[in-house]
Length: 365
Ligand code: ADP
Ligand code: MG
Image 1 (cartoon, rainbow, N blue to C red):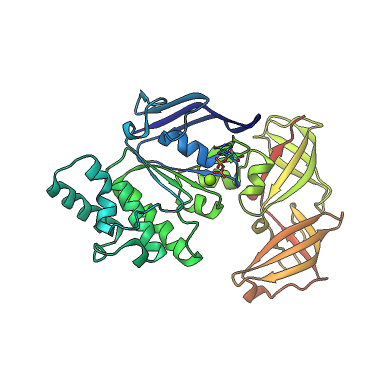
Image 2: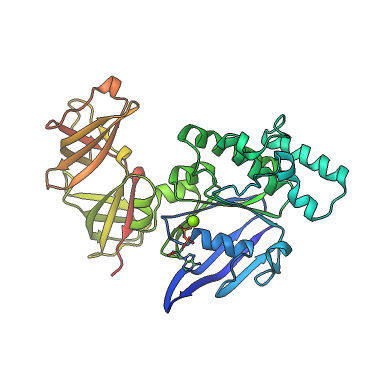
């Protein structure tokens, strides 16, 4: 089933104040797709999910489920399941009873309830825990029960609101893989909410980056990371350097950008950004874009020189804060320090980067 949100808007009015929680939200989720709403706390993720589920009525806009307008349908008429951050399991019921709950409400015959509960318990990995109560389960197991309870009714769309935030780091990583496996196995259309960019990147077909109730960018994880549309997206998804530049020359093919951070004070980029002379830009370079210039090699075009302010060894890499010759502070990640050695504060590094790892954000005038 496909899900379509058209101009979805929610304004909360409380005690004379207005909060625009979600504004002009447009999104299309295809059958079987895993879409993640990613953004900082308060950006409107939960409100969007609650509107999709029917717990919140939009101020304006439409929700289309498989071609049918369900904007004003109550939750139980939508065939949409939602997993909450808190799991919301019934404490007095066993695992089995918790999972069967939705089927009992639908008044399914007993044998069918048993069959379906067993089916979903196998898929989510809960066999053997049928008779336990929630308090007798680990966090990860409770999470699986919540997931099973939502999935057993075979919803058209599954909604998950920060489902892993109560788990420790190791378990979180494991459940990311599990949820993804189950989602693929059942081919279920999923809208997932998180403020964790690693979670979003590693699980999603499509990521919707939100801020202040608005969509900042929609794209697959690779696009979101390597081709951010604006500074917010660049900065929210991982670590980034944003260097000030201005366009010197530009034609349809090539743009020359002045930027004082670089040794040559200039870089040339393919003009896929439609840059025009005089335009201000931000040059986007991730810390891992920089590589050490091999000894005695001087013929690099994209060169940057800097002095190390601080360096942190994190095993696979050294994360450095550096200052360039023009005084700009920037971040680099030097990989494989076991081979190259750990650069120490005060020492100078000569680095280069490929045009492929560079991105440009034209600034709004
Ligand atoms: P998120 O899930 O991204 O953290 P929410 O959707 O919960 O964000 O909230 C978005 C904005 O709407 C916030 O500013 C929040 O305070 C506000 N908000 C959410 N629910 C209500 C409500 N019932 N009444 C008033 N304001 C609300
Ligand atoms: Mg929330």
